[in-house]
Image 1 (cartoon, rainbow, N blue to C red):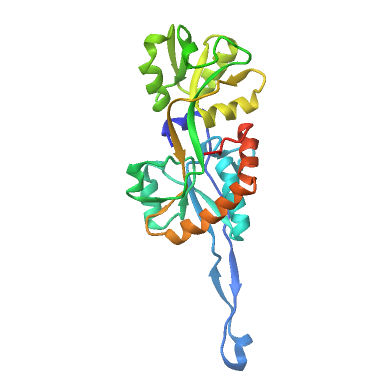
Image 2 (image 1 turned 90 degrees about the vertical axis):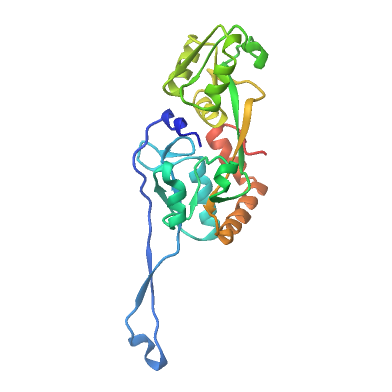
Amino acid sequence: MNVNMKKVLAGLLSLAFAGVIAGCGGSGDKAADKPAEKKAEEKIVIGLDDNFPPMGFHDESNEIVGFDIDLAKELSKRLGTPVEFKAIDWASKEAEIASGRIDAIWNGLEITEERKKNLLFSEPYMNNRLLIFRRAKDDSIRSEADLAGKAVATQSGSSTAEDYVDGNASKFSSTKKYPEYLSAFMDLEAGRIDAVICDEIIGRYYMSKHPDTMEAVDGNVGPVTQYGVAYKKENKELRDKFQKVLDEMRADGTMAKISEKWFGKDITKL
């Protein structure tokens, strides 16, 4: 995940739940006389940055919500195991999982060769592309080539999107960088700029809230990255257990439905 993508919306601290179950034991004919012993209930602890909409963030009721949250909750239900969402220092995510404080990292985490050195990844569950977003029905921008002579914007510090805008600045009439995408989209709707270059997950989430004012141009620009769930390097057993359920969710259409809820369409096709 690009850390600067977190600028889109603000979040609070994440709080989930845990529980205990009582168990009893004994020996001989007096088993019922032995005091019951308690043991911690098995649960899945998901580490995340809880300030990353639409993947994981707090809503107006301070409930943790998001695309990845819904996926994890559905997986939890199918496994019959409670899930806890734990906000972590994103910069220390690898240390968090190595220590055992969390079981998995599930929060729009890009699969990279560098991260594979310290983390065990699931199979990719979705792509993330850079897209061009335009005002609704602005037929003057139908492809990347049509950006020539246009006022193009992105978010400052947005890594691949900013690199793309900087690398093609000579083709545009002007470029502008905003501290967060929300301001860029508002200026796009107001006609102060012609296009925004943005990560698909963020742009489509905003577009799903403003379906009549902006559109995505078909086809990506720049590199395509992939998201996966990460585990402790040695925890192949958990990875395989999760992967089986994720594959089932993809096959039966559940993943597509969750995507449509958050992005207005299924963007989980690989």
